[in-house]
Image 1: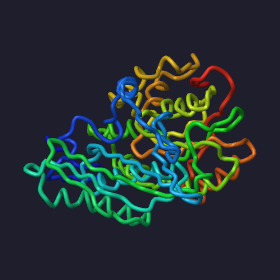
Image 2: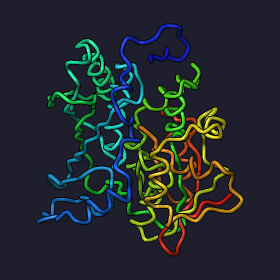
Image 3: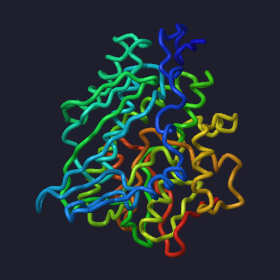
Image 4: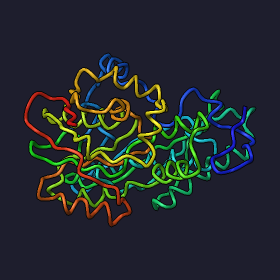
Length: 357
């Protein structure tokens, strides 16, 4: 059955989400399964020019070209999170480009990855997906210089993205320091909103918030890389705020602490989660890394679901010196991220995550 888009009376001609078993970054392989896959894969010879590889599950690979430039290379693609093909393209492209910003780099070029059920989707729908990706790349100031297309059972779209960064300005996810403060650039709850959308329980305002947050380019990453007092950076995507904060903790060999009271949520998300709008990916995330997370017994019942909520095209998470907090927040807010907030800190201790009530 076709469902009308939020705020409209007419049903869309094609529901992209009906073709896929998952959507957005909720499609990611569960963290526990991914760890097993990577554990059995050999790394081979590693050239000295490869500055960042798979060792700490960082956001992109980085290869040094010369004393002044390092190449950032990343790819990201997924199945539809929304039915509007243009918005699906925008969301997927924004999400893919984010990994370059999360390394502190400047994107320079993209390649499109397009897999579509060509006998089931009208060509104009596929074209609108590609147009959405192109619109975001124009906003980022980069060309789509090529790509690859295949006939697929499920619609999949994304990008290979390349960027540049000075070798001394790379922001890895492993370089957080004890005493650092954690700043999050975007509010949480994308997975909850997408779950509500699938159930027909998301109103027009909620849908607008979903589109706005998932299509906002994480451009502050470039400015954060210019600061010596910003030590580590990542973006919060499919493994949720808990999973990606854990990656910071593991990489640095520190204990991360998140303050539940200060975690920003998109409007309406808490109520929707309490009504049962939670993704299957949230449960799989907890199964994958929950043993490394200590939850304060005073947390609300929905806390675990929101901490593990998969964020499609989520915000940057920066680890910075305490004296840099005001400047970091200013960078976010000057670039349109008014919800940016201090959400925790890094401490000495057994690597893992504590969530305080």
